[in-house]
Length: 492
Image (cartoon, rainbow, N blue to C red):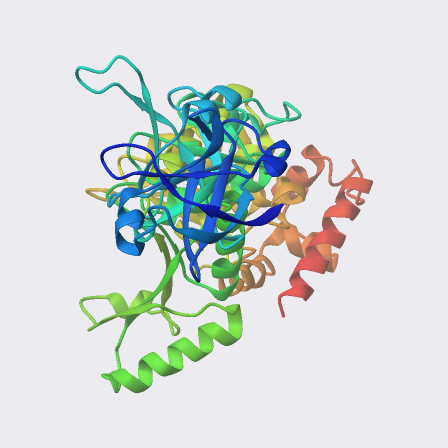
């Protein structure tokens, strides 16, 4: 509602502050303490609160405006309109003070989280989720309620609207891993799927609270292998286009306000023209993944790096918010505890398949085995989780801080129904190598080619339910055969 009228501005005190009375016939439109915007003299405006002065309702006019425009006893045309919310100046550090009536109406307390909108000329120019801080200045008895907006709003007086967010989930349905995370941080729910979390002075993050546990298990397995877990930045590395697309999709799904940067790490074995090389790499990654590369790290070859050379480089997906490291490390730690306490074979295999995306490989031999590289710190964790998968394996020490966990082809066959759609699923070259080498395994040839095999292989197939006592394929054996054929054809 906007009202126009002509009024004479009077003096209200010795300091030069003015008073603008509201005409008697318009008083019914306003109430004491209403927040209003006053506009006059070709877009000169200020914010005020309806007060009572000398038995009249009106607003104080700032001394600066009184002096600048010589308003004392001057008749001016006024436009006045109520505002929804409150007005406040933004300090140089982005700080604003919340009025007591807003604090009371919204029942605000220290560490509460609110949604706040900054409005100018009836348009929302800034919207943010912020935490409330309560302070008491020395020699003052009352509390001050503060929140912080972006510094680029400093020096402006704007209209603000706030809404308190609830710390209780709308439907009490939260992924169990994320539920544990929320207990250690200040959080509030934006909607049924999203919550914003604060921790100390770190930049907050909005997370999805309803991701499937199996998706997180696979993804966090990949993060266990190829993620940054220390320092000031969160990051995960992708060696294939498929990995890059998947990791980014799950990261964006988990971190709802994600703003990653993308870096290509590349070993230049051909001493290429740097400008042309960067242009070609950026184009290829954009075509394959729709990702725009932000930076490049071009290195010269050293030692045996030729053996692990990646034709298109490795993509590093990175964000600099420290709270993301806390989130990922917490979820990884809790997931491992969950797998070990529930002894869930499926979750364990999901996690191990994720680890294989970064640290696994199909051995270059005709045995069809798979190995996972590890170090002294992580080998114990992987050993415990692999035992839950019930796959037999052996650990080989390859160096001072280098270990390999080796899983034979028969163990992969025995658990193929759980592994077939996840093992090296984001690394086509490794997946192709695995199934190509599988073709030479005796048990696979017996299943897929009706090839005669040794007695111990037949005995293994019978003992695991793939053959009957006459060595004819059972229903389980036929299913395994069909799955093997399907997967081996699919990687050609």
